[in-house]
Image (cartoon, rainbow, N blue to C red; front, side, top):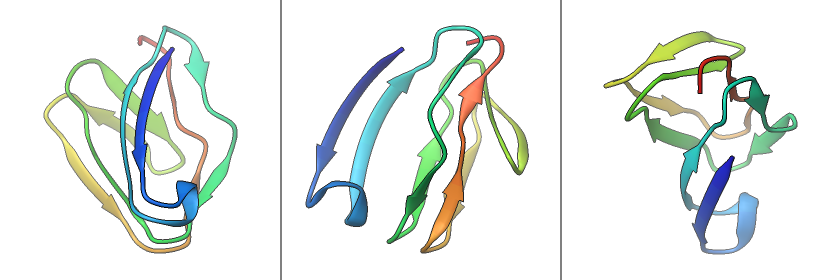
Length: 73
């Protein structure tokens, strides 16, 4: 898994991340105090709200939490 973070104040502020998941990998559950948005470029992103295929844009509200991962990478 590769992660590049460009943050203003860490996870409690606005953050931009580029993440590439290896197959069968995940992050620990965490909270995005100020919300979160992401675009899936390739593969399938998976979390509590289901599978998110390539080409999808998702915006989660403030104080959302999740445990993201990907079975296929």
